[in-house]
Image (cartoon, rainbow, N blue to C red; front, side, top):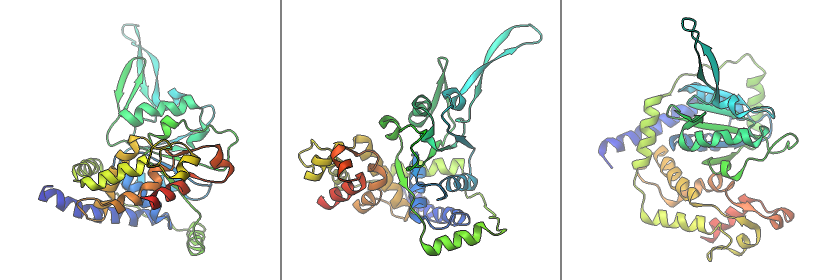
Length: 327
């Protein structure tokens, strides 16, 4: 790694600290959630944030968009939302001088650098699937014409895990496009007291822009050129293989409770995320502890449990714990 790149990694920690400070002007607590969203952002990844109402999921995304000098759109997903409502549609325009009519593509809200897909599981599958091409290829195709999305581009989606009426489960193919599934838990008593004091007063946060488009793109590229030791890659591959029930190395709990394990994309995201985690701590190369730190958000939506697990109350997070202990 070049000396200039090492200097940039040292500055990256300061930048991440500045971002956290700005976020904490609005969002109280949730340090681990904020850290995981930052890791995903510096990896060019998309994040699905899951939590009950009132835990500041939408507020967190809005705040991150405010402190990043990036274009931002919020899409409120509803059962009647159509794919063209987010990708865009064609309209007929008439040339007043010639009288000729032509179709013109009007870009939808998906054409922004930061997308908040609020309550993504409320939209029907065909609308959810309209995000697939954008999330994977950073393009949108309409009527045979392909339009490129401005980089950096990342989707921060929210989902309510307890309200199932009027919702549609995300297809596995789309879930796999999310680098992280981040779980937001309830605040502790002290944090909740601070939340009540802040939100019931006249307090207004004065947020400043911390990072811009080109700086973020440069840091995303920097994360990709960071070196990784072969033994870290090998142990990561072993970790992912152990989540697959038919793999010889799979623990007996995986064979009993897992229907489908994680695929190669999980290994890619674990290594990439470990690089970003190391960079945020001013280290030039990740170790396996960095991989373990992000194992749950990377794997929990890729380890699909079976009916036996559901009947016995065994969740994917518990299975990941067992796999990590078995390594």
